[in-house]
Image (cartoon, rainbow, N blue to C red; front, side, top):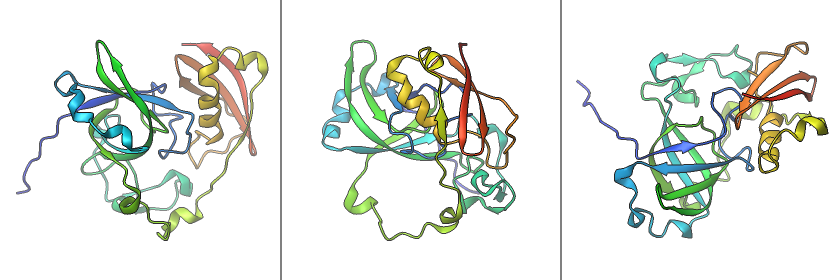
Amino acid sequence: MPQEIKLTPIAHIRSDFSGKFGVPRQSGLVEALESRVVFEPEFRDANALRGIEQFSHLWLIWHFSESAEAGWSPTVRPPKLGGNARLGVFATRSPFRPNPIGLSCVRLIGVERDPQLGPVLRVAGADMVDGTPILDVKPYVPYADARPDASPGYTARTRQLSLRVEFPEELLACVPESKRAALTGALAQDPRPGYQDDPGRVYGLAFAGLEVRFRVEGEVLKVLEVRGT
């Protein structure tokens, strides 16, 4: 029988996304998104982070806690392929895996020294729901991790579309100034599933304590309402 492996979360992410809808589908797509990696009490030792500020980027290894109970399937339907084509789960980044583990490359903004929380990592470009368990943190090493000649596989055929976001000034004013670029960037990535293209449908995105309602017509996303949750 396979040996059982026990993993312990060392930290949790603190992000502006309270739910999965709207979270960028890959890390690094929305650089304006800032998050914090808050370590569990037993790992709040500054010595464990000694030297980390020498690196510009980090790998975060994390648990797909939002979908872990759903189990796994040998084949999945990647949303970016329209939800029609089936591919092997190990040929995708689907969260529905035998071991629901995610991998994200983020930019390190800096290390905060919080009197209650200890050392906290400020990062940019994370693609995680608030509260996601972090299993490990590793430095991104360009000479070993970067592969400019790598084949993109089927992702070369997926739509790399950035929507034009129409955000009325009176609605944008409802969003804290420090959050506007991140929210607009997340909306521009088109939060909808790849198989949905109904210009009459109104969607709701929870972000930074706000409910943002919008509609997509062609390549334009129109924000219709912003209200507190």
